[in-house]
Length: 59
Length: 135
Image 1 (tube, each protein chain N blue to C red):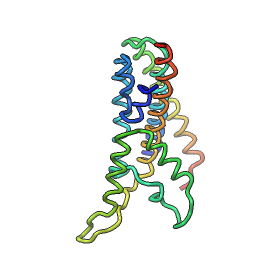
Image 2 (tube, chains in turn green, yellow):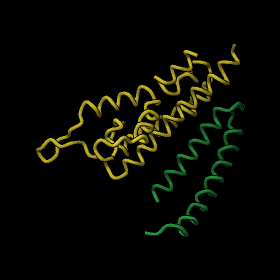
Image 3 (tube, rainbow over the protein chains, first blue to last red):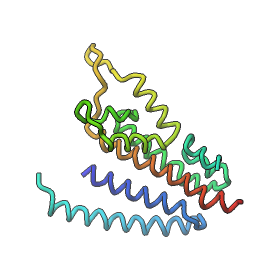
């Protein structure tokens, strides 16, 4: 599980840093809007990863 | 260009130098927190490619790739490499033994790898988007 969360964290980090380097005005509203969107996507990816994990992982 | 290259020595600083203070304040802590998290999981040091688990005499291309990508984080990575190569042996129960790594060392290696790559990306991006605009 720690690997799954770590990979999601690293994925979110990559997307967030990429997003910060692109041209857009940095203000509180924009940051909040993008952060909420990214948080939603990361939750979605986490749920999909857990479902796939339960189907394909054999211990 | 030289300003962009300083990011390979002190990661995140080109944003501060070229007046992008808000971007600097958002990117700088992220990079360093991830780097130190990686160091914590990796027992506090970046290691040479030969240290990765592989049979003696076996050329491990992924080990080299990981190592060079980690080195892109600049001065902090070089310092931690210096520390790990300066003290490859640790004292354990009164005897000097070769440094061993914690169970999550591979995860730490991923953290360091990603943060090195991100630093490279940030430096290239600052050259492309900000410094070219100034010209």
